[in-house]
Amino acid sequence: MEAIREKLIEATAKFIEYAGYRREESKDIGFIRPDLEASKTLPNLDHRIYVTARVGIEEALDGFGDLVALKYYMGKKHDYALVLPPISEYAMMEFLLNEEDWYYKIKKEAFMIWVCNPEWGTVSCIIGWPLNDGLKDFFSNPAVANFDHYISQLAAKKMMEEEEEEFE
Image (cartoon, rainbow, N blue to C red):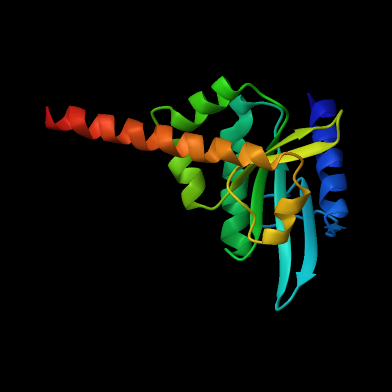
C-alpha cells in the first residue's frame, strides 16, 4: 500500500511541476505534514497547493481530516486536494452520497478530489476546481469535471427526496 501511495505522490508531483509549480519540501504544519506542497507565483498572489494522497476511498475521510487541519493553519487562499488512484465511479458515488453527505462538506470547504494514474502519468480533477484557473489546462481529462456536476444533481435529488419524506 505504501508503494502505491508513493507512486501517487511522485506522479502528482510531476503533474504539478509540469503545470509550473515549484515543489516545496513538505514540513509539519500544525500536526500534519502534507504529502505534497507546491507553490507558484501568480499576479498578486503566492499560490500554494497542499496535497494528501490515499490509496483507496476507504481512507478518504482520513485524508480530508488532514486537509481540514492544513486549511485551518494555512487559510482559504490556497488549494487543497485529496489524490486517489483510479477507483470505480460507483464507489466514489457511494462515498460522496452516503448518509453523511460528504459531497456537500467537501464542496463547502472548497476541497478537490484528484484521480491520479501513476502508470499513465495522468491527473484528473473530479470534484472541485483549483483557485488558479490556469491549472485546469493541465488536467488530463477535462470532461471528467462533468462528474462533479452529475454528483451535484444526484445530491440535490437525494436532498429533495429526504425533505419530501419528512413532510409525509
